[in-house]
Image 1 (cartoon, rainbow, N blue to C red):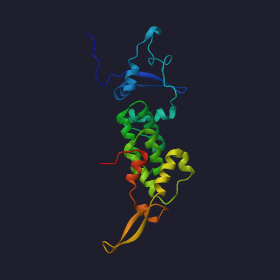
Image 2 (image 1 turned 60 degrees about the vertical axis):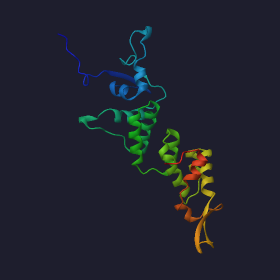
Image 3 (image 1 turned 120 degrees about the vertical axis):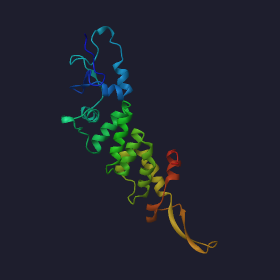
Length: 222
């Protein structure tokens, strides 16, 4: 009588080539969590005989992928030694996970990377840069608002990180208003008004959300 294969713990391995390094890992986490890999594994064998990924001689080549980035993704997908998971550590490693998870539609892994990055001490400019590059909409308005409120002006480092267009838009948001205390005859009291012109220290407490939405074409939070 033929033995049956366990539906969960009988794993098929796949051989991958990243840069000049061969990796052999269980196939299921890749195909179950990424439609890109699922479709890749469904490709027909063709006239060459052996399908790609079944041996070191014929691995699946992941072109344009850095080995270090891929290693960080594997840390999330596969448990480490003794059943403990060795997760990525720090902004750079979690950004690697975010990059590949976004590229290959690992939606669950992408959300895990975003949550991990949110828990780290990331500067507003880095959050804006990551939000623009990887389409993290919920980060955009709060991070730009923090840049608009900060005392330091937009500098060369911000331009290098965000690009000239985005940096100039944020600079325009920052510089277009300041708070001025004026007397209101109607209420017979002082009140604060927004006026165009130079920055005032009190702008660090302003909410620039409406201007950010208009300038960047974003939807206002509900």
